Every structure is written in C-alpha cells, then in structure tokens.
Image (cartoon, rainbow, N blue to C red; front, side):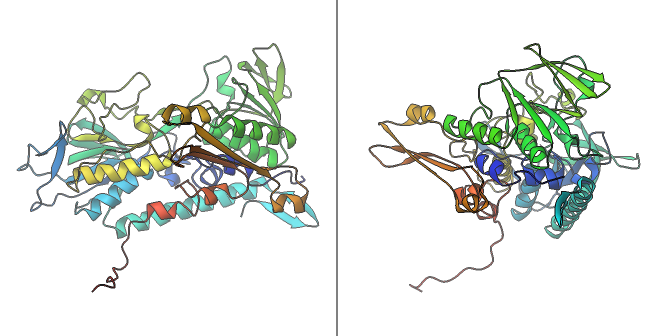
Amino acid sequence: MNKKGSDQFLWLLLETSISHFDLATSLSSSYSAGFPIDLVIGRAALVVALFGYRRSVDMARKMLINGELDKVGQEDKQYDFDLFAIGAGCGGDLAALTSVSFGAKDSRNFGWGINGEINFNWKKLLHNKTQEVIRLSEKYKQLLPNAGVTMIEGEGKLTDAHTVEVTEPDGTTKKYSAKHILIATGSRAQLVDIPGKQLAITSDEALSLEELPKRVVILGGGYIAVEFASIWQGMGVEVDLFYRKELPLRGFDDEMRAVVAKNLEGRGMRLHPGTNLTELRKSEDGISASTDHGDEFTADVVLFATGRVPNTKRLNLQSVGVELDETGAIKVDEYSRTSVPSIWAVGDVTNRMNLTPVAFMQGIYFSKTVFGGKPTKPDYVNIPCAVFCEQQALEQAKNDVLVYTSSFDPMKNTISGKQEKTVMKLIVDSETDKVLGASMCGPDAPEIMQVGIHPSAAEEFVTMRSLRRRVAGCWN
C-alpha cells in the first residue's frame, strides 16, 4: 500500500486545543482517558489507579471551607492516607506528585517499511503501539514510587466521605480511609443513539483493529474525528467525514477551519458538511451507513467521534452525597471541591474545560490549596485551548482589534511538492499592542506556539517541577 499524505498538518492545526486525544497520545495510550494504560487494553470494566498519601501525624493539614482556610474538623482522627486519588490521568498523577512535594505522606516505530516500494504494516504499528504503552506504563510505575507515591491497581468506589473500597485484579476487596479523596477518572467515548449503533466503534477501539480498514466512515467534526480521519487517510484508507456544521473543528478560528477543510479535501478525503448519520446496517460488503440526506455509504469501519462523557459510573458518588450534573459530571466549586468537603475532583470528570493543560493546572492548584496552605483558583483565561476567533477578541478588547495574517509555502512542502500552505494569525489590541489571540496551521506549530500544548517538547517548560540548583545573585 502506498503512503499518502502522512505529515504533521493535523497536529499543527490543533496547536491550542490538544487534550488527551492527539496522534501521539493515540499511539501511546490508546485514549486511556485517565486510566492506567496497561490495564485499559485488557479489561473493559472500569479500571482506575488509586493513589493515597499516608497521614503525617505531626503535620496539621488545612483545607478550604467557604473561601477561608480552616482546620479540618477531624484533626484527631487517624486515616490510612492524607490523600486518596482515584484516576491515573494527568490530573491525578500531577496532583499526587505535587502533594508529595508539599509533605503529604503516601500509600499510593510506526509500521512504515522502505524496501524498494514504500509499504505499511498495520500489525507492526499495533505491536509497536502496545510496546510503547507498556513502556510508558512501566515508566510511570517507576516514577510515582520514586517520588514517594504507592500505586494500587484496581476498581475503586466510595463507601463514605473518607473511605474507598478497592476491588483488586484478583477479585479481593480492601478498604482504605483517607482524609481527602480526589476523583480524577477522566471521560469516556460514547456512541450516538441511532439504529445499529452497536456496529460502530469509538476512538478507544480505533487503534486496536486487527486489520487496517480500506474504507472508513467517521461521524464527528471535532479534533478526535479529524485526527483519525487524517491518520487513516495518510495510511491509504478511503475516508468519508460527516459533521453537522459547515466546517470542521467548531470553536477554532474560522479562517483556520477553512484552511483545514481545504487541505483535507486536497489530500483526497471526502467531506460531508451539514450531514448526520441516521442508521447503520450490516451488509455483504461491510457496514451500510444512511444519512439524513437520503444517501448511503458502505464502509469496513464506522467511527463515532461525537464527544465524551464524564467517567463517574460505578464510583458510588451520589450515595455518599457527591452532586452530579445532568451529564454525570461532578459539580465542584472554584477550588475543585465537591459538595462533600473531603472529596475533590479535577480534569474531564468535572466537565469544565476538558484539556490536558487544564487538568495539569487543576491538579497542581488542588495540591496548593489542600496541602500547600495556599488556596489557589485555576485561571481559565489564558488556556492553550480553542484558538481565539476575532469575535471573541472583539468582545474582550476595549479598543479596535488589529488582525495580522501570513500565508506561505513552508520549505518542506515546496521541496516535496505538497500543495499545503502554512497560515498564521495574530489578533492585537489597537491601542495597547497586547496580543489577544494567536493561531497557526502548519508544520511544527505545537513547538512554535510554545503554550504548553500536549504532546510537544515545548510543554516541558510549563510542567517542570524539580528544582535542580539555586544560583547566588551578583549582589552577594
């Protein structure tokens, strides 16, 4: 199979809206969405990693109550842990590691082959992906204990405001008490409720297919849908992408969205704006997908990428008094605290702003608030997420807005003959020269933007937490 159009365009475009579901994370974590990646592959049941912090008897802990720092009511009560975090995603991991630093004690090759003709081996990709998943999992299993965190693998649920019951892989159950409990179980993909939905897959299964499909129908216009459409198309798969709006990637800058649509079509992908799927049926040739326009398409695989829902089922939250909203998300205050004072939640499970940098921030600020003695509210203004559009800038600016744009052919495309341009845009306050928004679509955009986008090398600048040395100033 000849290699077609596999380059970096997709993730450049997603420069400021990457969460857990970009190409690199797809290959490394198979969209684990907050669960231990080595366990998700083998078990369909809810699997979480549980991290806890053994109580330090001689250290008085504080927590935020009604906007003020008060002593925890049960200072004399002995718990197994200071903190028990349910969920092994970026929010839970970072909260665990940061809490340790504040003194909390713990119990807690891509398949292409070049040999004359360029060919692609799907099974080799799957094997290498699995090996990378194992490597990353083992890395975290070493990192966390080295930082003072003990990891417990199993399925957890709350039995009261200070107790978590864990069902371990061998079926045994144990109970652990904790002064604080943190929920960080992320979100899960969902199937659209149409006849034949059981024939479709979600992003969770997309990189575990036994064979590379020849024809794929994708429903959804978000970055997960566009990412997988680009991945498969780059591997030579025929791709039909269906979405409700006129352009994909709602929430991004409209000019960037138009560039994306044009480039995707230029690669040979078939786009179907303003179109929904209404029914799936098994046919002799594969899966028949009907649309609300009366058309039918046949595919080997149908992928639903229309959003995710908070992963709160089976945690027994409501029985202990934790309030959920209509989507199943955990309701929290500005400090990530739930309706139960000893229970907190961060990341996608709260359905606030479901992005990796946000989960990082929420986890760190939770630790500062609860264990660092510094109540800190997450600031959602300057988040590397959906690109600023001009209308948003106008709503926030006190003066006129200046829009600067640049469009050019990157050298790597001119040399290869690829007809895809790099587009850059700045939105600036006319009086103060303050940059209100920036967007880019083109090679290496995640590194160029440098705003903590995941995954990129640039994000390392905003996730560093280890102080190596302190250098005396010249005045000493």
